[in-house]
Length: 156
Image (cartoon, helix red, strand yellow):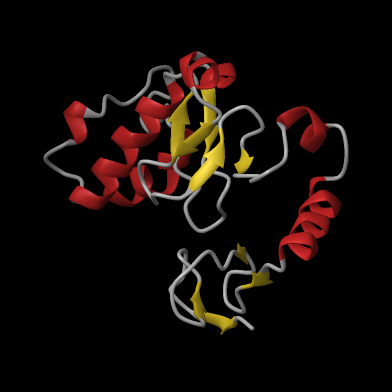
């Protein structure tokens, strides 16, 4: 049964392997499942209960945490901090924070082209590890990426 549930957990609603007319109850399986599988199944059930229109994910590939769009975050602030990875993103565009570019301008054109233009204008450099732009705004000549804490370069 453990192997069956483990192989079917991605389906969220797991058919009973005996009658196939009903679904297994997560709580009925609690005592036989390893904690890791049980926790994953509960997490997937919770996510399935949220309407697709209300779901969005952190735009950073190494995070992708599920968040719920209640509409309030977009009304209150565009700049939003992911509660899981602590990185900033635009709550309206649902992309990494586009500093210095309004949402209309960002959405109306290719964001990468605009970002590269702004980076050139501001003399930003890319982190060699995560490829995010890093702004030199004070301090010593060394620049560090706040996302990956790698040395990006030396400012002149």
